Image (cartoon, rainbow, N blue to C red; front, top):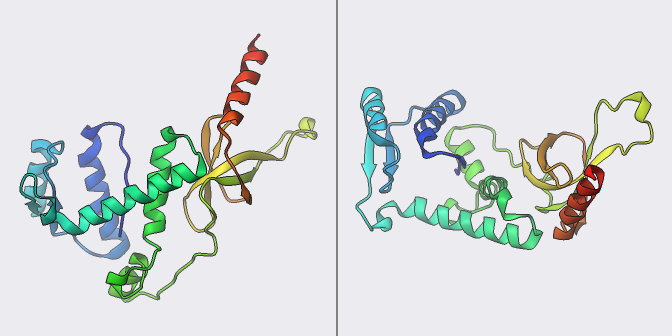
Length: 219
């Protein structure tokens, strides 16, 4: 399974690690016992002290030998390749890379693998935990396609205003909550009520047009 976290500062890495271990314990009723790392040094002494307190075994690969951490390295490579392909094919701006990488991980967890006997990582995890195996894929849409997210709580005095945000699909919060990037407002929103047009994709000139409108309004 791939759990993708994006951070603004490396100093928050330890907090994310703690949150991840807490999530694993709560959701899967499993205690993490071994943490495998590459030569990452941003965790610092605080991480070593916390790991010792929790009784965690830290296994680090030798310098310049990524093969010792082969599974993670291969998974990371696949993640980068997926994210790159998604960004190029959709024309989504590169500064939205956190959304692209998270969605790449989301899709990778639902992609069948020969190593897992053509089960997806999600299905393999469910089988290992002896849970009912489910594979919800009908909610998936083409990354970067046009998305119309319903506007809620529109004032009665604005009856002629558009009833939906015009944006583009950049991710999933769950199987029925979508993450939609709105170029005009430069924001990513989560919305349950979304209609898709999978034949239309973002045109970089669209954001330029919105920028020109903003300048005209200011003038």
